[in-house]
Structure formats: structure tokens, C-alpha cells
Image (cartoon, rainbow, N blue to C red):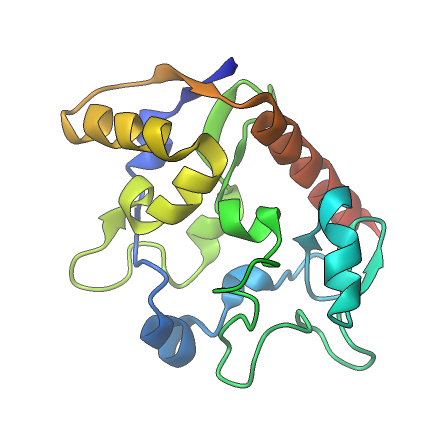
Length: 186
């Protein structure tokens, strides 16, 4: 195991969670889109996921899912804006771990900056801290036991702290960051 520092300030940013009604009626899957990518989307796929995603009919170029011709959104976004892969085994790891990413130094777990530009940021009567609003994503990135430790630490008012992270998860977050940056430049 390696460790990353979990940024308490980043984890305490407040968001409306990703409930299906909210996605369908309010945000319309804005996190799955990109205003800086020429394709309109930046959905990273890890090499071990490519065959399954291609088998479902998606085109992948340079590690990124490509929209269908003439469209500017993920091909798995359904008519109600819900992810058609959400409950299944093929939802890309990058999607499952979002909005969490690594800081430029690669040593700190943070919330992707672009999430503060989305509708869910500070939305609603009682927005939750990111570590609760996106708890299943935190579990994906850090593992269930570590995510629970992070939750207890932050619930108790704790500050920045190093937590263990599986080397594969660290490598995947690093790869997702590289793919997203490369996709924004194309």
C-alpha cells in the first residue's frame, strides 16, 4: 500500500449528491460532459476496461470514450441523462471514482476543480460535504475500509491526513488525470 494525503478542505466542499431524480431533472449529467474537449465529453477508460466498453458498442480513442457521430455526450447517457452503465459491471473506473482525483503533485486526494463549476456545487437546501455526497466514489478510489476511516476522521473534525491507497487505484487516478488532460488539448 501507498498513502495519499486526503485534503480535509477539499472533502468538505458542499455538493448535492448524485440521486437519479437530481440527475434527470436538474443537472442532466453535467459531470459527464466537458466544455473544453472538442468531443464534448472526457470519459476515461482504463486499458483493462477497453474490450468490455468496446463490446457494448462504444468507440475508444486514446483512452477516452468517443461520442456517437454528431453528438457531444457519452454514448451511454440515456434519454433521461442517467448512465446506462451505472448499475452494471462495466461503468468505467474513472466514472465510478469521480469527482475525486489527485493534486498536480500526485500526493493529495482532492475534488476535481471543475466540479465547483457544476450545478451540484452548493446546490439545494442542505448540500453535503463531498466525502458524503460522493461516498461511493470515495469507496471506489480508496477502498471501503479506508473510505469509512476517512469519513470518521472528517466527521470528527479532523484535518489533512495520510490514508492508505492501493497501488492500482493510485495508478488509475494518475492515468485518469493524464487522459483527461490529453483529451482537453485535442
